[in-house]
Image 1 (cartoon, rainbow, N blue to C red):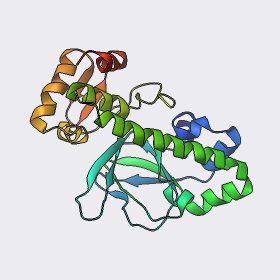
Image 2 (cartoon, rainbow, N blue to C red; image 1 turned 30 degrees about the vertical axis):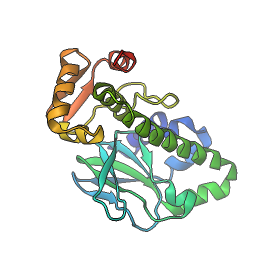
Image 3 (cartoon, one colour; image 1 turned 180 degrees about the horizontal axis):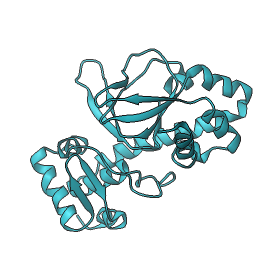
Image 4 (cartoon, rainbow, N blue to C red; image 1 turned 90 degrees about the horizontal axis):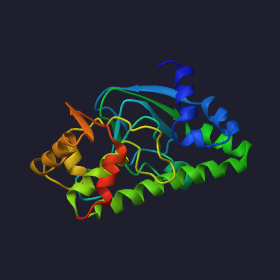
Length: 232
């Protein structure tokens, strides 16, 4: 993608689209595009502090890395997703691992550039606070959705969140495609592959989603949402 196309996309999609024109322009002037092959690490838990990142095209997976346990898939992100604010706010090393689940285009705003923008305009910290609030809402949503006892509701909630349609505040204008295998969808809702497949296929028969190899598209967001309010 051309840098002008990247800038146009980020100006109207995701966190940056909610910020002021002045802050947005300052960020877009300093972003650095990066290309990643499928499976390549953007960064790993324990890496030295770095700047902000945004996904422009493709898909990424975010894994936890708790000491003494195997990595666990936490979230799958679609274009427009920003991440990596921990080092800017807390000065810590990377807490999670992020990798491209398919060939992807990302941009980074280096840590030094983040600080330069904020030093020039301390009031711009409110946009970082918004960034953090979006991350907190996402994390809270992940936990709340996992507590849904009905596996059908749990799966519907997950698909809506992965497609950017679950947030009450920062909802996407349209459902993004979900580039995850059915097995990984099952991992995210704590279901085996044999248990998740019938649920997804029932959604497809109802016209709520369309399933193809390595990809799920929500075709009826409102219909999928309605499954969350049905009687268990």
